[in-house]
Length: 373
Image (cartoon, rainbow, N blue to C red; front, side):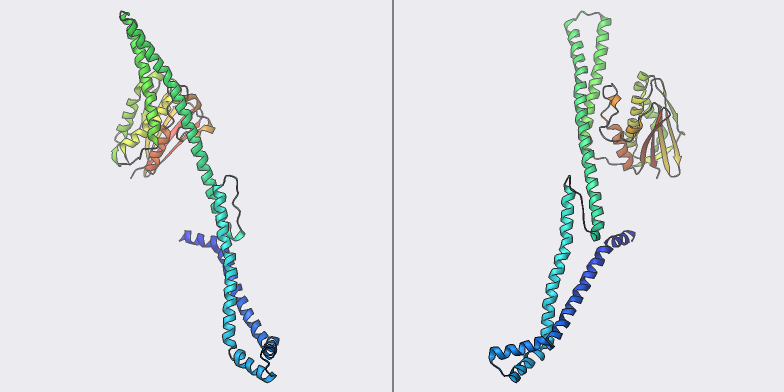
C-alpha cells in the first residue's frame, strides 16, 4: 500500500500535466465549435450566399434559400463533423507532445548506458530522472567493483604463479640431491627429506588456492539447517588449527557454555568459523592469545573471534571482498587466495545473519550473528 502511494506521489506531476493538457484539448475544441457557429451566422454566412450567387448565378433569394436549406438546417451535423476534425487534429498535437516523454525516457536510457552522458529530463519527469540516475550510478559502481575484483584476481594469480616456483624449485633441487647421493648420511638425508616435504605441503596449499579461485564463481551454496552442538563445533575448529597455532606460538581460549546449540547448517558454519580462525592466525601477533566466545542474544547466537593485532581502518571495510588480501599477506607463507572471508560472508548472509569486523586498541574482532530459530 505504501509503495502504491509513493508511486502515485512520484507520478502526480506528470499526471497533472497530462490532465491539464487533456482539459485544454477539450476546451479548445469547444471554443472552435462556438467560433465556427458564430461565424456561420455572421460574415461566413454572407460569404457562402455571395459565393453561391457567383458560382451558380442564383438570385439573392435563391442563394439565401440554398444556404438555409443546405447549411443552416444541417448546421448541427456540420458543427459535429468540424468539431470531430478539430478534435482529431488537436489529439494528434497532444499525442505528439505526449510521446516527447517517451523520447526523454529513451534518451535517459541511452545516458544510463553511456559512460559520459548525464540523465536530464523535464520537471514532470523528475521521478524518472532520479530512478535512471540511481540505476546509472548502481551500474557504474558494479562495473567498478567487477573491474577491481578481476584485477585483484589477475594479480593474485600472478602472485601465486610466482610463489609456485619457489617450493617447486626447492622440491626438485632436494630430490635431485637425494637421487645423486645415495650414500648420503642418514641425518642429512632426513633433513633434506623434511625440507622437501615442507615445500611439498606449501606447493599443495598454493595449488588448492588455485582451485579455490576457479571454484568460487561456479559453486552454488545450499543450506541444510538443523540444530547442533555449537560448543563441540567450536572445540573441533580450535583443535584442527593446532598445527598453525603452534608454528606461531599462538593459543586459543574458548569462552562458550557447554551444550550450547545453534540452528544452522553445521558444515557450512564450520567453514565460516575455520575461515575466520585462519585469518586470526595469519594476522595475529606471534605468541598472543585468540579468544573465541559464543553467547545467546535474544533470538540469535553471537560468535566472536578476537586476536592481538590490528587492521588499518581504510582496509577494514574491504576485507570481506573476494580476492582481497592485506598487502602484508602477498609474499607471506600464510597469505591465502583472499576468498576465505568473502565466502564466510556469503554463507552467513545466506543464513539471514550478519558478519562484521572491527579493529581498535591493537586488537581485531570478527563477530558473526545468526538467527537461532
